[in-house]
View: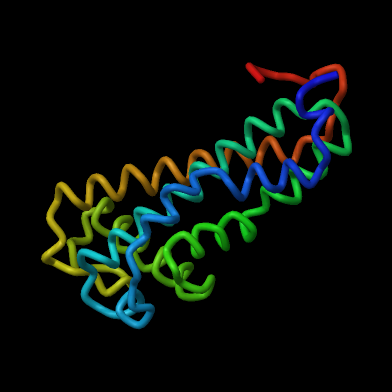
Length: 173
């Protein structure tokens, strides 16, 4: 019996929600209106970092749990708990924002970063960019954005696969 098989499905959900709890405790309060209005700066970018890091940690934990699932039931529980909406909601909670505010902030920052990456300039794109955003900060945030996209893509691909007992325990558990 695997460690996952011994744990009730509720324990898997608790594990996902508890991942990175220390970061959520340190979250600085963010004015939700400031998070969705120009300019992007200190606390708003910190909220983006915190939320994205939380989403990455949960997505990586869910990916490990999917790979370690010992039964179709365990796999199904993790699939449900690892949905993008569930993980984004936890990222929002980590920032102290509601889901709509957080997703708006994330879309705004992501749009700005993509516009900068594509050479459209710091104030290009629908994000209403902030030319005062230093390149080093933009580079760090873009690395975080890319990591998030890669982990979420891997998780989506893994979650889309049906459970196969013969292929269970792919990778270290």
